[in-house]
Amino acid sequence: PPDVEQLGRATWTFLHTTAAYYPDKPSPTQRANMLNLLHSLPILYPCSWCALHLGQEMKVHPPDVSNRVRLSRWLCERHNDVNVRLGKEVFDCAKTDERWKDGPPD
Ligand code: FAD
Image 1 (cartoon, rainbow, N blue to C red):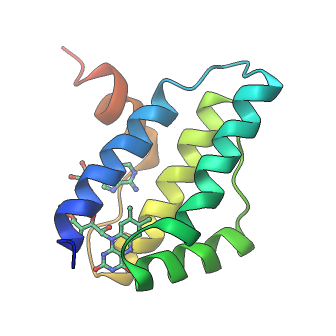
Image 2 (image 1 turned 90 degrees about the vertical axis):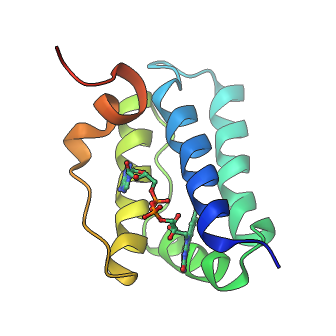
């Protein structure tokens, strides 16, 4: 079976980075493809209990793909769902761009 921790770090890196560079004004095609990507995760993510939990959270909190800021915020909150469940520190979603796009301020 896959290493759930390593898989998780790699997947969060991909998802947060992709959200950080998602357009401010996405086209209908970009929105539809982002929705497809996110809705694929509960079906295909190769950690079955992770996939199950994510699917449950996505039913309560449907993805917001309307723009870059909203998508990044939604994803941060879903990651925090997992952080809380695992007893990890909750991440400050105001720092999402600093972590995944801009780097630390100088
Ligand atoms: P990670 O949680 O992997 O985070 C990587 C980096 O992201 C952090 O160092 C931090 O800089 C940044 N970060 C942290 N929180 C946020 C946030 N809210 N927003 C933006 N950036 C943030 N593991 C399980 O054991 N059980 C599960 O049920 C489970 N479900 C998962 C569901 C999904 C969809 C994914 C992608 C992963 C899941 N994992 C699960 C894996 C888990 O979330 C972690 O990836 C893994 O435990 C490694 O944790 P980490 O402490 O190295 O940092």
